[in-house]
Image (cartoon, rainbow over all chains, first blue to last red):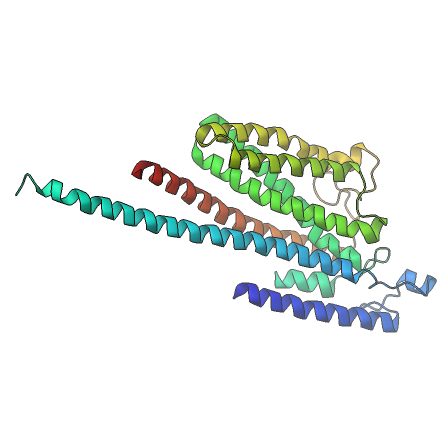
Length: 106
Length: 210
C-alpha cells in the first residue's frame, strides 16, 4: 500500500514538474522570474531537453530501492516458513519421545 | 520523502548550464554519500568482529555491505545516465568513476565470498579482512578530485568542501534530500540487520535439531 501511494505521488509530481517546466519555456522566465542566461543568449536552448535522463535516473533509483525492499520481504517470508517447518519437526520429535518418557512411570 | 520530491522537482531552480538534468544531483549525491557511509559501517563492524569475535558485528557488516552494494550500483548507474547529457559520453575512465567502480567490485567480491566461501566463523573472518582492505578505497574516492585532474565536479559535502559553491535553495534541497535518504538508509540497515540475525539464529536451530 505504501509503495502504491509513493508511486502515485511520484507520478503526480512528475506530471506537475513537466507542466511547470513547459510553462517556464513558454514565458522564457523561471518560476522566480529570473531570465535564464542561456535562454536569452541562445534561442535553441531548451532546459527540459534532458528530461528523459532525469526520468530514467528517477525510475532506476526507485526500482532499485523497491527491489531491495521486495527481496528483503521475500527472505523474511521464506524464513517464516522455515521456522514453521522447524516448529513442526520439533513438536513431532517431542510426540515420538513421549511414550518412552511415560514408559517407566506406568 | 514527499517533501524531498516536491523540493527536487518543483521548488529548486533549474541550473542554467546543465538544465533539468542537474536535478539528478539531488539523487546522485545522497546515493554517493550513503554508499560511502555504508562502507565505513562495514569496515568498523568488520574491525570490531575481528577484535571481539562476536557474531552481531559480523551481521552488521554483512547487512551494511549488502545495502552498500545496492547504493553503489545505483550511484554508478545514475552517474552513467547523467554523464551522457553532462559530458557527452556514458562512461569515462575518470579517477573518481574508476575508484568507485573498483570499490563496487571489492564489495561484490565480499558478498560472493560470504555466499560461496567457507561458512561460520572462518567465512566471517575472511570477509572482515576483505572488507577492511576494500575500505581503504573510500578515502581515495573522496580525495580523487583533489589528488587528480578529473572531469568530475569538486567536493560538495564533507570537511574539504568549499562553502558557498551552491545557490541557497539548491543547498537546502540537497540537505533535505540527504536527510531523507539517510533516514531511509538507517531503516533499511536496521531491517536487514535484524533479518540477518534471525537467519543466523534459525540456521543454528536447524543445526541443533538435526
